[in-house]
Image 1: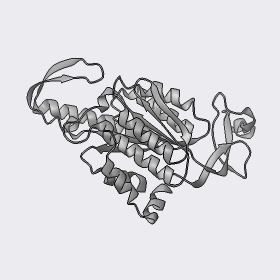
Image 2 (image 1 turned 45 degrees about the vertical axis):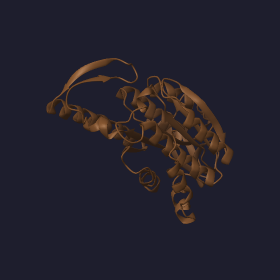
Image 3 (image 1 turned 120 degrees about the horizontal axis):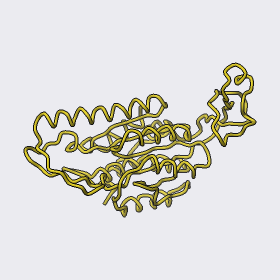
Image 4 (image 1 turned 90 degrees about the horizontal axis):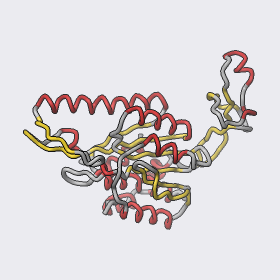
Length: 288
């Protein structure tokens, strides 16, 4: 069972004012920047192959010798895209909820807010490839199909966010709001490419990292055999205090690296442990 039914009840219990507050963070009638013709120029961004060459501002080129395109402001609803990591590493728990259960519940929370405002939302699972894609739609039936999909999902395979984001963004028809939920435990080079691509194809984006307290603290002691849940390779290690300290420092550096890339691209990043009350974690994300 992936989705916490108590969390669903808590979402239903949000009063109208609170629901309106948190949903207005990203949904509904908010200003979106589009390329092409509009009321007024909002800003510029660097030209990418495939962009409409008619949007190139040649006066800017004359000054900078670099190609930039004009972007205009208009009122437009954003389509929500929710991507959930279903690789083998998400099937992990020392105590309490598995990472996939926790992350899947957060995903459902976002979908619930979209449903409550009758906005379009899409979802997909990913590991080393994109699977179980649900195209953007509105309504309760679409929401419950997503819940069913998550409840029946199997966690397997390695994580390749670079490849999966490349696949998924090719399917996006318009600039959208993208949410990616994962443990983000993979090489930084892959994460960096994926995050910059998310920024290119979204108006707004949020990354939610889900970690188990046990994999942060390494609460085990002495000699222990670890098995990589994705590669299935195992290795015997002595968990000395020095080893734990170096591991925690590297994990902290990894998370800081993700935060730095997100800050550079304007993407919001949250790192959450599964011992945090689920509803509190969700409201903390959408209220900021």
